Amino acid sequence: MEKLAIDGGAKAVTQPVPPPLHGIMDVGDEEIAAVTAVLRSQRIFRFLPGEPDEAAQLEEWYRKNCGSEYALAVGCGGTGALICALTGLGIGSGDEVIVPGYTYVATAAACLSVGAIPVLAEVDESLTLDPADVERRITPHTRAIIPVHMRGVPCDMDRLMDVARRHNLLVLEDCAQANGGMYKGRMLGSIGHAGAFSLQHYKVITAGEGGIVVTNDGNVYRRAAMKHDSAMFFWREDENWETFAGENFRMCNMRAALALVQLQRMPDILQKCRGIKRRIHAALEKIEGIECQRINCADGDCGIVAAFMLPTADLARRFGEALQAEGVPAGSIYNKLIPDRHIYCYWDYVMEKRTSDPSGWPWTAARRPIEYRADMLPRTLDILGRTIQVTITQHWSDELVDEVIGAIEKVAGGIL
Ligand SMILES: Cc1ncc(COP(=O)(O)O)c(C=O)c1O
Image (tube, rainbow, N blue to C red; front, side, top):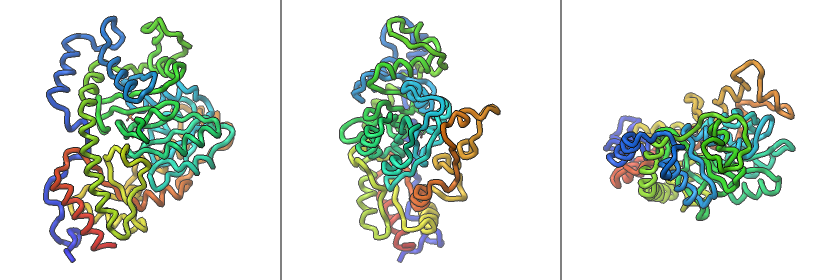
């Protein structure tokens, strides 16, 4: 048996691994030209009279590709998109919203921003919301569910929509990490009552910062738009606005121009990542003792992360360390030594119900006692503790993929 690199053997991966980033790594002359053209035109603000500007074109892309009646571009990221969507859906003070215990903290923060109470639910072996656990956590105060397509892997939308239908709940898809992902032929974001995308630096494609809300409901759209711009009714006088105080979450044309070029790159990014993930999964399936992440819709998976589970957290930690020594940037997801903002027990202001002022709102608006504990989702922590993840990018060469697979096989041979 080959000596593992962690024990002083030669590294399995001999070439540099590109950074775990996608669209931003492809920014080139086209993006520079598009942003420069907006600057030269001096039409940065989006609601000037005239042609459909870049922000409107960006919305049009999402409307068309999601098959949604309405799309709203926001300049302030997936968090802003979630806040606008929640506002659009009419979620507010004291309403309970079920969110997975494995998502970026922003999903819960967006609920709190509109006054809603995040109710945490378990993820399953797909690392996405477990529909059975969602159903267990429904109370008379529950208004909505936020399925999060984590690491580009679609949630089990059929079952989640069924739960929502039976309990009369709204569904807001958090697609921040899953731009371009699909579920049974439909673009993620278009299945629930609304969808929210992120266009920040770390996502499949980027506008620098930015996000998109999609929905088929004109009322949801108008409320979301009102939230995104406190003067929305001035820019679009033709709409029938229900006015209330909004923020300034507007998208500007420079960011939209950047995103429009990046959208053209997205099919290629996804196709390459999906192909690499398929190869890695095919190799993993042959290794005894390794269980691949369950994928709810393989064709729609963005392919940006390969994840697999080991029998115990201790094995996963050792496996992750050995893989890193081989030159693979991988690790177990839940490792008590490394706080991760994507795991609920590290969301300190949620766990401790902290607020920006002494009022304690919105927890004071909760309609029943709500408590959070670091060990409240044992299944989520167990699964995450046993899961190793490797971020794939479109810039992995065939040789690098071969070496990464070789490294996983080598470590499995030495440790399992
Ligand atoms: C699942 C998820 N939801 C929401 C967000 C928030 O997006 P943004 O950082 O663009 O506000 C992120 C960003 O990392 C995310 O990963």
